[in-house]
Image (tube, rainbow, N blue to C red):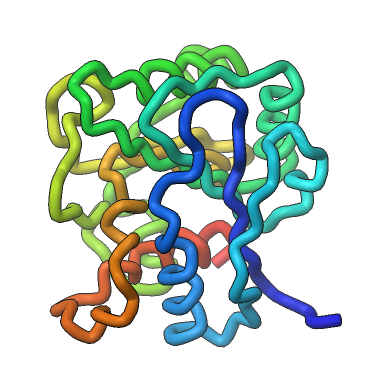
Length: 206
């Protein structure tokens, strides 16, 4: 049986639309193979947030455009995973000014971790130098409206557990940015998945 250092887990949740940017995981996994020495499972794994198997994942991805309203089992696993040292990258894909994904997801985080748990991540955080060097979160081709406030933000937000980020929260729709046709990657002036490599290396303890 193959042994992997990393596999990509997408979290499926009952509300909203969790299955966005379907080519993104394969592009990110290819970049890990290209830039790092990690033994990478080339297949995306989709696991229900309510399934206890998600607690074993080294990294989880959660995204969508619509309402986020966890079931009790989803909420329990999310809290247990993050407080137990897990890492979830949450990408807001909502291009609507209503900020539905942001408002509902933030309400869930407040319910689980407290009103003030979600905080601005400084642009000199270790996240931005865990592999490649960035001066802060790279911009995407089409910036979103912010977290429902019609503003473009030059920072990400997150929830820390034991002085490490457990939930990384983006409003920049990185998933869409990384969802390109891989066959045309050679035409990119700068590989836009490099920040994904940073995120994953940080999640793995870099």
